Image (cartoon, rainbow, N blue to C red):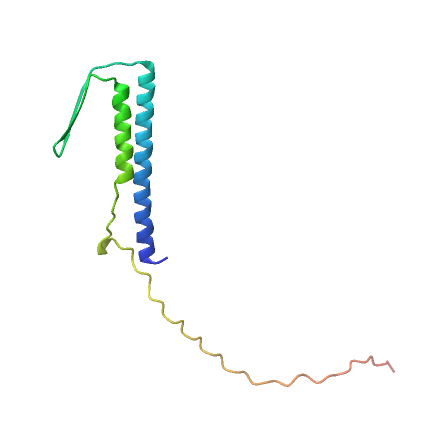
Length: 128
């Protein structure tokens, strides 16, 4: 696998894991808020948010509605936020060693050819 392919897979893995974690966390917040809302749990709190001139106030609502709202915000952030991973030169994996050609094995000296042995007949000699 090339260095560039590993970097691409690493980036994809971190991007998808961020989105999946945000989705699961947001779902759990919303589910807990729904359960609290159905049980009728009440409480008093103030939630105020200002973002570039826009204001949002949530005052004296049930904690269930607050958790449902937070779960929806977390899911939205997870879906619409991208993640970028930058790999610098120092963080690269070491390059594989340069392959050197395998040196040829020295040839063994040729042995002189020995003629095959003569065929001898091994007949039984009769005793005299």
